[in-house]
Image (tube, rainbow over all chains, first blue to last red):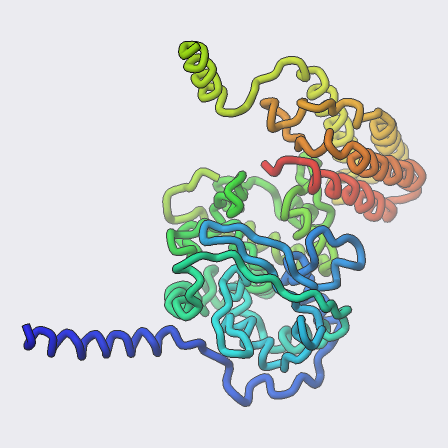
Length: 304
Length: 151
């Protein structure tokens, strides 16, 4: 018995050590994103629209210009609990006014807070991890120009064991991938831009791709549609076995909110169209090109 | 008594929580018919805006006038309490419409404003169609976002 313990205890210590290292928050290199200089506000606004930051971070029910007050407070239900979007306005106490460019980069690329704590992946850093450096610098410049709100961020309603932040390190190890889903370096300019807009900024897959039991995206059913995380309704598939719209139809939908049958976008997609309608026409065409280039999912259809 | 409870329970289970009401059948048809009149005429304008059909000032104005006519129907009156999609199969109207008829009427009136703009501008040239569709689409979306059950 003592002999067995002699073996098990060190093994357990080693395993715990590995787990501790594995779950440690990763951050950008110390000299990366050292200076926010050169950030272009106008380009940053396009990044902001394409990434849909305001859609989740505006106060619940905000209309018009108030949508640019990123006070937080909207609740996002999921099978793991309800996540509340925090205040990311430039307020120094309740928002992110004190953040350095490096802090923003760590949040977007690694899902890590300035204090070195893992964010919940309701914040779609699994997509933003693909963001280009220049876009982060420009977004930082744009965020500074928005109005501040002193509304305190509200806590998430997430129960045990999902509230153990350190365990998110393991989640990231499994599901935070730095490779593209649509593979290939010779996609051409339009498709490459489309892939960046869809897989990185637009984080389309976060809703349109089903998740596994641990909440990771099921890449074998990429864009194959999924149950709505609220538990009510479904989110449609974008794959060619289900979506028959032409590239023009898709681009026009993202511009006007009209489907080819001239029904209008509803639910969260109406908010998405509010953003995509403000992108350059070439960007909408690039998104449409990406959607048309999606393969039929390799895994069995999910029925959405 | 026990028997009645059993029958009631069975009925509730069979109907899956949705009461298949027949009494609002016509209101639902009228509402959806109004939406289809708008959709088909938007299709005429949209095909020209997308470049799928050649611009035709007269056809554009006619389509805009039909949308305007539809917007003059007092649609909020077609949403009596209990006629929503939670109670009626085939409807996607939220129950909140009849509880907030003032808010709903405001959204419907916004369609009227956009339709007036469409009638005034759709015939003035192809370039006018973008903003016209933008205004109409904004009105559709704003209401659907609030008052339609997501499909």
